[in-house]
Image (cartoon, rainbow, N blue to C red; front, side):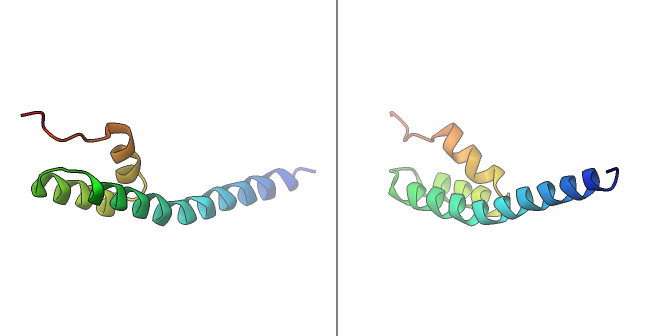
Length: 73
């Protein structure tokens, strides 16, 4: 019975990592498509795109949390 716990934990960690690997490209593509449709300055779009592509998962999640809006000016 002692050997089952490490095997179960290993399987759960592998399943979690597999989910992240599948989720990363989906989140990134959705964030980049949403970014393309926003009326932001070119430099802002470039910086957000670099963040989304350069920082796996966290870049896309940050984009959706911050939800960048165009300047009011």
